[in-house]
Image 1 (cartoon, rainbow, N blue to C red):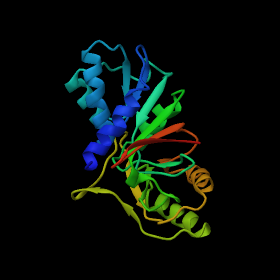
Image 2: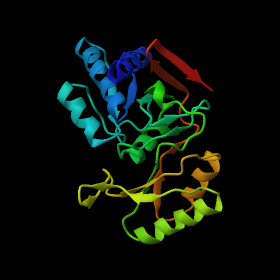
Image 3: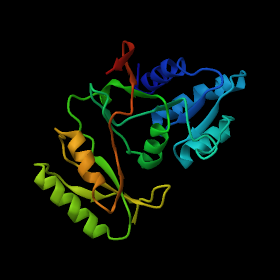
Length: 230
């Protein structure tokens, strides 16, 4: 299987966990988009679900394909969220936010009774950090916030560039109107400690470490799909 076929396979397995009548969080990214396409086929055949998208990009695709949507305010408690990941370790800790939707993704995941991750086997790692960690920050005080993150990283023995994500000549802007700093730490030995410490920096809106949110990961490889659980 090529990369897209593996994403489709993971999405197919994840779809088997979706039941009629569910309130469903719908993720963002290339693998999640394959899930949306399969979900649209099921809703066209009569499956009754209500979806909450984690980004404007996902919302547009769902509306284009006819997947029924609600806002999280209309459905504040969800049965299941299905989303991709940039990295997943064997304890189901994740790095997410490569597409810039980490804040909404985390809010939706936290509002769900269960979260299932879909990914290809290249995303499975022994230690998080090879993928740059997205840190969503308020544009106000950007330099001060970046310096605080750099000091925190140094105190934890983490090194690597912390760069402002750009969209052409302008800073990348999230759906919430924030900037993203991508931290290339290479390895994050203590993800929980880093997550808690980042949360304590006032200018940090959210970060891409998703801990104790996923309960199952569907991982696709050339030989097929397998599941990871805690």
